[in-house]
Image (cartoon, rainbow, N blue to C red; front, side):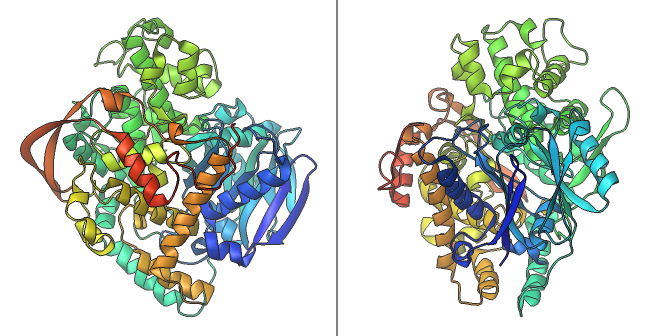
Length: 633
Ligand code: SF4
């Protein structure tokens, strides 16, 4: 069991206290600990006042799960929690790499930042994790995120770093927290860090700690299981861009702001296309999956080197904005990383602006399309390089239209007017990630009910879209075969509840999603064995899943206390009003899909799924856990 480090940035006081054991036994760590601490600090610091994202009282919490301390395979994930400027309620995000491992191996379960510094600072943790040095960060303002990290590595040697880029200096709501080539991208947590004048956190790198007796054997068994899982083999071979082809075939590749579900230029962006630009593998420390790779555009006007060009940034900066040029896409992603921006959010707001221009709500000249744009093969708006790169620079610098778009499409739509809100593809203020809710009903529901907005990483109901029959036979045999029918709504609330719970457990332990809730290489029974050894008492599969349920409920309670209800669990009305024609396929998306030759028109009917979802959760018809006090935000 570790400690919690509390850093008050206003008066620079630092305190540590032991993490209560009962807290770890009930919410595990990582994401679960994050929301529990958010509740505690908001209540203590604000009493009955509703804290806003940029208030100094908004606690910014970095937490790591107990498995990141050990050699458990792919236990590389850390979590960040705060009130979000986009959702105005819970903000959450995660990233992989060494930062969470270093935090945890320093004996810390979490760092809680309260207050706000008068001057820009970064903090350096001591070798013991007990003391903190505050350093001036004026010279880091305006530097690219890679510039900030290389400067700090030059000063402090072998360290793990979480920092912000220029977008956070300007308080863009799309600002991310960067760590190596990974990033906590969703819900604007970089902007919260910026509002505290906190530029970076520097932690000494530490090697793994031995777990309790028997844990090492389990680590070895799990490493072999994860490494040999068919999904891991494909991820190692192609990276996460492997999803582009199959999602395009089935109509689950959001195109031109969700006007379509398949993209005519998808073959320019799929795994085979990306492989032509692939450099070396850049895996997270000691991960047997090793899915991360560098992408190199060796020459030309889009010359760049990026790491982590995987499905979500490809979907957001490719089909979503009508861009079929992979070199342009890589360069757009490079700019997002250097500004420290959420590429999913950036793709979402650019797509919104492009559709507003297409519909005459904005003038094409307003978005930079007036003069055409060089290298643009796809019309004057969609895929226009001048528009894409111009808007990324504008968002990163918070200039002109970029300042408005940097607050997310919902707030931008209110400012633009003229019916623009219909084209804002968001939920709870967060741009939709790369799933098509009409085709993938479970993901549609998951994006709507997510407590931190429309993020793929919140619920991750993949068993149907991956046609993972093997996992379904073990975990939900009573729902087979209907649950595997992606476009059918039957049993999707059941699938979402299960997936949310398991995903919350893995987030809380620090397990990368690609080893567990995405692929089910690691099963709940494996987690129960690990926790039994860690806690020194029998933990059942039921206990594991109950912990996940508890974490989701805590997150729901936090938002409910701020006035969130059923009307916030929603999706853009496009998905219920505009039918999407999709082709039906059979088989496993990793092994290859077979067309049935049939096609259907699909919409999503959210209300019956919400009713069933709330019933399964034991919440009332308004989506609120019973008995909660609910003042309006
Ligand atoms: S699966 Fe990929 S993202 Fe996850 S820990 Fe391994 S290398 Fe990192």
